[in-house]
Length: 226
Image (cartoon, rainbow, N blue to C red; front, side, top):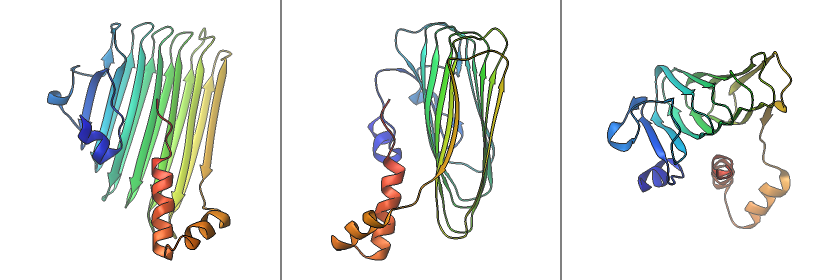
């Protein structure tokens, strides 16, 4: 699936796969039939959600197997109003879901990530990046729910955004914690290029538009690998 790297900057590796493109499940690219992970696999499970979306879209990941690593890669854009819900339910002891979400908003988007811990010793760590174009509207919500008797959980929902002029961004973090976790974090940041970065690129001969494009590309591609 090298085209996923070439077109969507998605790193693929040896894994059981569940692939969606433009909000539609792709059985020819998937080794699993759905995102209900109710058995332990020898390989990690990689859920891949890419392409262009519009309207209401939903992705649900249910982890019921113990000791199962799950990875989530999302790279989407919207040219029309869109609503994306990602629900992650972890009921597999010693299982972890770790994900990177990239959203390029060219219109209006409402994004909600729900991370729900049902048993102890579970992890859900989701890093979301937003590239908001001029005069767009973006609303990003993240909710972590840790049920009672869910000790030793790790929860981390982070947002970062880079915005053009006139873009409106709203972050809505929320935590509902009913037992003591090992770690429960939320973060939200707005990225701005620094003057030394801009001056360095200008001295290299880049025009103003080329500097903007270079900084945007750096922001988009600055995801650490799994």
